[in-house]
Image (tube, rainbow, N blue to C red):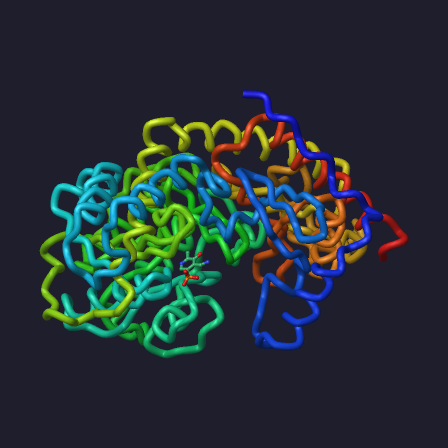
Length: 468
Ligand code: PMP
């Protein structure tokens, strides 16, 4: 279906008074901890699919998608219809964790999509509506089931902002969590990347677990993201993920896959663990499963279901509108093969971005899986003189593998230039130097081309000498 692109936001449009006033009041009244609002000073008033319209009358292509929440984009007709149906039916909107037909239909649809090995013996826990609460529940579950306390988690991980989830995230310094290397090519901790780098990461994990003097007691679980999102869009190699499954299984350590961001077709499979065929013991799901409304669940194998009634409670576990919107989204993604579409379009976008990288030395790496894409910006001026650089293997982009220093200021400039051109992108990664694209899975080829054109243009503008 060909869709006409909205013209890029005019660079010189005068912001409306309403827009200015709302932004001014926001910065005067809202917390200093606000995040997206700082880099994206827009006031969305209408939205459909990929497009957001601001109070200033400008239109933007939204590649942030509510931090990966909007698998079908904004206000998809099937989502709106599902919500209206519940509203018109007179069903209660809030029911704690009581059974309802809406919840029953959501659970049936969700179980239909899950990896068979988990769905066949699955239990579901409805949590408080944020991903971080489902992470808390998963950690608590495996601690209760194993009677152990320690947790294995990875460098660069992001699991949420409540205390247990934060402990398991890469920025934490807590001793209950042992930190393991997450494999990555561009900034490989072993300096080699590829399958060998991933194998070394796996061996380090194995040795920590088997060395009686490693300082890491037998843990209650291992939690990982199949593609690290906030960590800078780093896809785990399938072989490495299978190794993590073997290592944990052999030692009776429950494996928790955090698919909060990677789920519902985003990476080119319905669930990202499917790429490797790994069946985790526990899956943490949120974001897209609520079809743009708040919903979070943990799904796990029935033998782990040992906790007491009320072991993980919460008032807002029964959002009927979210379950209806979520069930409609899951069904639409499944029936329309949107995971496969994300795979094909994602491969195409990655290849176009790699072409772009060839002409832009400030692009250090292009990576991703499906429609979860990252472009890492670096400082090419920091490159060592050729004579001082040892000969090293050549990376995917045809350059030496030794990574250049990250360029967070350039990334921020690219984000601003994108916004001027009517494109919303997120920044992520260790130094906020990775430009992230998380478009809806429903975008057309033309829309994908428009996104890449605007990004290329923004990159050229931001990297031009006038900016540096
Ligand atoms: N896990 C992952 C992998 C995430 O990406 C996020 C959010 N970005 C979370 C957990 C936390 O979800 P929430 O912000 O809804 O608490």
